[in-house]
Length: 479
Image (cartoon, rainbow, N blue to C red; front, side, top):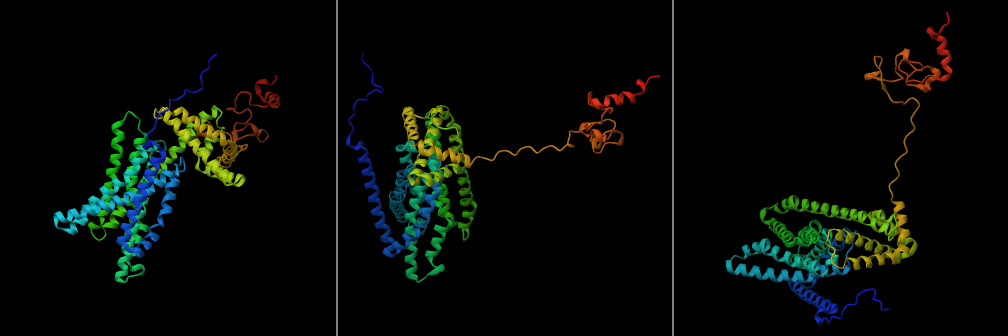
């Protein structure tokens, strides 16, 4: 009897040479390398060799901090390093080259057309530069959005991609500005705190290392919201990135034009716009990351019921503290390889949760089943190392149990209304009751009512006292 294969076979499709992966990677690496060489030559020509080295040494200082900050934001569902490397290289090489060439050409053309070099410089800095630079940086975000769609799933991914691209662009621009400032100091003989290099370093590296990332992050947020939109909203998906790009250009123009607002215009714009915007965007990204953790906790219990995960894993994987504790536990007991295995397990579980959420919303795509199966199989292969670590992390970071109720003292019984002999505020209190209704010393366990009192409930008098009460009742006396 003939049998069918478990999976349908696909017909062999011939791929052209330009569709092969290694050809695309080779072309991209070649483009970035050539852009890097050209930008290196241009910057070195404007700053000189000594100025270039000084600018390079000073400009590299904020880069690790910014990359670490964006990587920290992406800890819930970290994207591959190759995307971040591409973004940084694009910003430092391709975007910087486009900006230098386009800004110089536009400024010279305006100066020639208007015969006003000073006005051309101002117009180029406040209008031309924001449009050119933000468009060049947004190209990297667009490429990742189109060709690495699986890694671009929300606002946090857009913020990270845009921020790393802008970090690379600011790195190259700082080399140019710091190297030029150093050359000016060499000509004037200034040094120390009063030098132009020190002032440039303070403004660009100390006060505003987040300036370029802040502008481009607005574009990334637009792409991130577009990634969350369903396939039916084509107009929204097209307009949201464009709106983010326009906001980035506007804020960049305001920042560049702050020098034209007077002596303290820079500080006014910095305090009134840059710092609040930075705080607001930071809050937005952290709030979005907390929502992602909530998605993990909400979607993974379905896989617990199916047997893929243990009952404690949704809690452990939905807490950044528990994740960190799990990696530390694995590092202590299984070395660096164990910590990497736990990190991969956490990443795969998070991807499964996000994939399931997109599937429920109709945005998972036709390959949902294959991707889900691949991620679950990866979890299954890593379970021997990851599950003990996550179980320990869940127990170590579990909230403390609620405190036990305090024992009720013998006199703390509920107060009852007593009329007309009530205590304070009309409520009866056995401790402050009038003398005729005070509890008898021998029967305090029947408080708040005395044995046989007028307000005592039926049957509250002890059986041993029935006879005494019967004898003391005048109605029961024998004549």
